[in-house]
Length: 373
Image 1 (cartoon, rainbow, N blue to C red):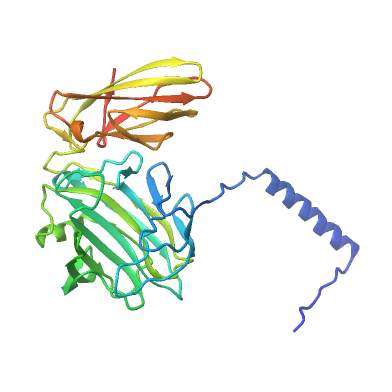
Image 2: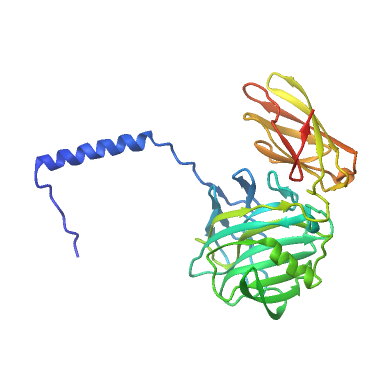
């Protein structure tokens, strides 16, 4: 059927319409332009959002193209070519995370943190689902006996918010449980690299706010972790086997509140930072000394601070620092990963800057604010 065409009744009506259009154009012209989304197609490409989370493409199980469009609050899969057998591993895990994943640590994170030092770990997630794909909406929690920031952790907790198609978690169905007020199917097994404890929702969950530690305590009670272990990362995304374009994480939040009974990284230790600089036109070096003024050892130390606008790090020594600008986090190397009570650790970096030079305003060590000198 052809659309009905409405003609203007009078010249006066057209004048009113034109006046409205001119006013609207002026309003739109004065509005700030929205920030363009970031598209990532690289196999392991990543970026940061909100200055605190990392979004990763993480196409690890296929050579077919996968692209994600990253927004300020999450991401959407825009291209997901290829497929893999549903009786094996998925083709990728595009996700957003707080913590450390294969040495890629989110800015300002206080992870890894000893489980006994964590009072709570509130998190929120909102998903958008599509038809015509085989996938699960997977929320991952990683635990390890050591505060490692690289490689595979010992235990993986998976929360399946949704699954579509003939896919199932690693291992076998071992029962059901009520966790954080919801009923779940519980699966347990090993994928050859790590233990996997999965909680599968009986029907799709679009969004939810919960405490990650409710699921961590399940792993501890089932002998798959101990209170002396470390929480290394909290991740939310999708595991597609076939297709997947259109799947989206609309929003993600994660924080780890320390103050449990066990000390460890991010415990209630005190700290002092000395930040010395050598500055020349357009460049500078920074020598940083962190002193543990508390009464317990700080393991897997992570110093978070924000570089002033226009500054960027070009190289570093005695620490791993990421990203190179904005809210950054410095972490220890294998040989200086712990700071004993009264002890110090030093590291440095070289950088470039535009405009006037300034020092960072504040520092925090594993989530605890430090004094400066």
